[in-house]
Structure formats: C-alpha cells, structure tokens
Length: 170
Image (tube, rainbow, N blue to C red; front, side, top):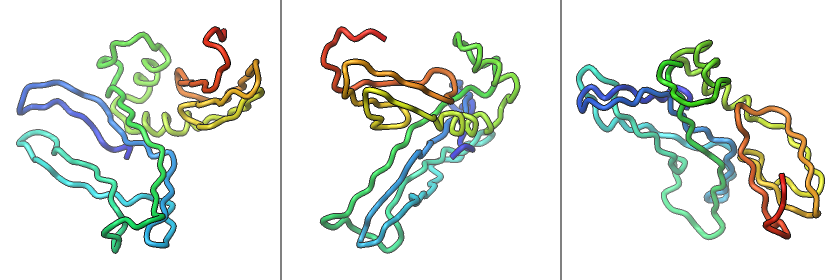
C-alpha cells in the first residue's frame, strides 16, 4: 500500500511525518478447498479529525464466503512495514544514499515503490541454501559460504542459520 502516510497529528500536537507502507512480498492461501494468490484487504476509517488526515486501519481479511477455517486450510505470507521520511529535512540519519533519494523524490510514494523494486534481489549462494529472499536467510551446508548479491536499496539484512561455530568471520 504505497499510498499510506503518517502526517503531523494536529489534534494531539505530535509530529510524525513519514510514508508508511505495508509491503506484501508473497501470499498464498488454501481456504475452503480454493487456492488464493492475492490477499483480501479492507480499509476501516477509525477517526476523522478536523484539519488532519483520517486514521485508517488496513485489515487483511478472509475472502468473501469464508467465515471459518477448516482442517488443512492455511495462509502463508511474507510482509513487512517500511517507514520513510517525507523529505530530506525530516531525515536525521547517516545514510547519504537515502538522503539523496529523499532530495530527488520529496514527499512521494515513489520512494516506497523504489524500496520494493530495489529489494527484489538476485542472490547466488555457494556453500548454503537460500531459505528466504528478503531479508536474506541463508542455511549453512558447508564450512565456507559465498554470496553474490545483485540489487538492494541501502543495507541488505542477512541471517545465517546452521553455522557449525559461533566464530565465523564475515
């Protein structure tokens, strides 16, 4: 949902100006004997404040006609929240790449789109098995692991599982 935003709360006087997006990387469900490749999403307007953006909740819901889960039903999905400042003036961190992008695309949902597209990584693993594409989760199979990563926006989180020793060096 690249259009979701956090704005200044004019009612309570709190500041929080950022783009916030729920990024659904993958989704698969088997419910009531049917397979679903896309989630159902409902939006609930919780509050509407004068001179402020509405408070909207995004809900991932069961498909229409499904009221309960049965034996064998499942839902599998990978998702994460991304929160990015509206512009470079609101950013106070050390990441110069991010600061430059915020200067190029101030107050734009395109930052979230770039996050999604840029983190669609190409990964080659030698000495291990790729268990998850983002964040990267690598299952060790050999004493030495070599990664070749193409893509990524900023730092790419990596987790190694099954290492034979806590003394591994990166």
